[in-house]
Length: 115
Length: 118
Image (cartoon, chains in turn green, orange):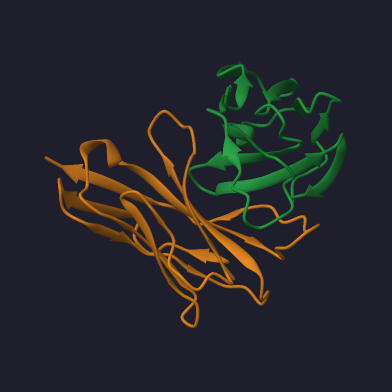
């Protein structure tokens, strides 16, 4: 069974640009969550999508947005990039996402660098 | 206040020895789940072990076991017979408000960097 696939693996952008990251969950998983990981703040929750609806959202500005498609694939968009957006962005999937005993399975991440 | 506290930024262990990574948590929910993940330098997060708040037995998965002390709100990870490949960052995480229909995301600690010495 294929794992969570994130593309691209690495990305370099400049301030003010926008970027779109992609995540394909494990087959059959309907919940997709996004996390930002930085050395200073650690792992922080961005948002969760389930059945094409945003179900949960972390404390990030509106520049960070996402969506989920009918095949459960998800994209995350960051507009007007800032230097502080440089981070590893991790996507995680689980079958339903809500119940406590389901681990989230993570992809390898997209490492975004802002110049 | 931090929900998940990992007090050991870095740990060293000799190959083949056991090591305990500490994790304490803070929640007012009665139903919650606790997870440990391993993150090698490549960046992927690998799920290791899960403990539910209502589980009476400590969870075990191969060389990993979770020392769950509910009254103390601690969920320490024990790795037995350490291997060189165990060198990585280890994160403790919690999902609150568990149960059917909950929308809990994972809350992570800052992590512990484990280095296994040959």
